[in-house]
Length: 405
Image 1 (cartoon, rainbow, N blue to C red):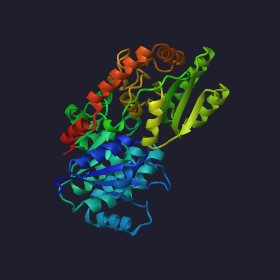
Image 2: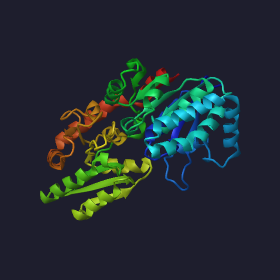
Image 3: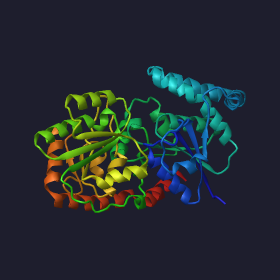
Image 4: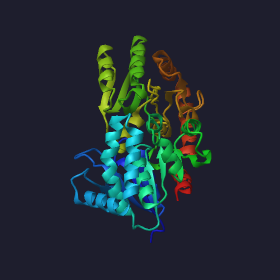
């Protein structure tokens, strides 16, 4: 018999790039806690997913946007039983988002779904509502809280707290607890919103199941293998990695760079630079894949590089999960002094940090690793030990449940 139920509200489940949510939910279920997942968007047909997600899909709710009797039944229910509250919520959304029409339309599109989820949860007992991402999923949790008079918690990660969201302060004030995944994020939120109680914002790192990340002794090869993984967005800094590869090739270092990617808004610029620099002979772009296949690339790589940057609109990463995975696989990591990265990478101790936006520094750090095998081994050992101390899944979920239960 389950003692507790946690309702997760997410943008879309499952997503190949959100293994941290999948791992968290799996670990919560291992504690004997019942989980219901509400996905605001449906999964795509024939979409590649991780093995663990198939079982959780059975506990996931999906809804059409408008053409559903259940949707309009829920809208009618709240318009008749909580008319003023429903209208007040709707007016608040209009008032706070009218200067951002795209975000307003997205919020209005999920409003009927929010009422539907709220109606489904109304009669459930002993539930906790937790949203992942401070944007639309947390807006839905906030709406449910207003309509049903219940509490909620949410986790904010990176882009979702750095982008403009005029309701974010309201959501923080209304939440029982706010979780974020770096100390940098916590400091940012507390300083940006001085009206909130700083004790309400807690840091819980994304957890990693270390049994799934077993490093191996790599056979010595003449070609040095650089690995990078991520969505083709500007903040990942792939354009600086490509420029660094151009510098390395001019230095006649025998290397290959494998970039495992997910399509993003910066894809056109990345591939244009790739062709302009004529890197086809040394850089390979590989489409996204499930975790079990990804681990093969970790095992064959000599180092991992992700030169993150802060974009002009302030967008940035927190601590990319692929960096934690690479460290767990004892790969020496090259990254930048951006956001929460210095919380896990100590320059020269368990990885190498360079200033963001400097391809020559990235190239120099890679060349340093290429020429010093003992340094690679030392950084790899220290890196795995560091992330085991901070990111082991059972410990991170222990901390999470203390805040949301």
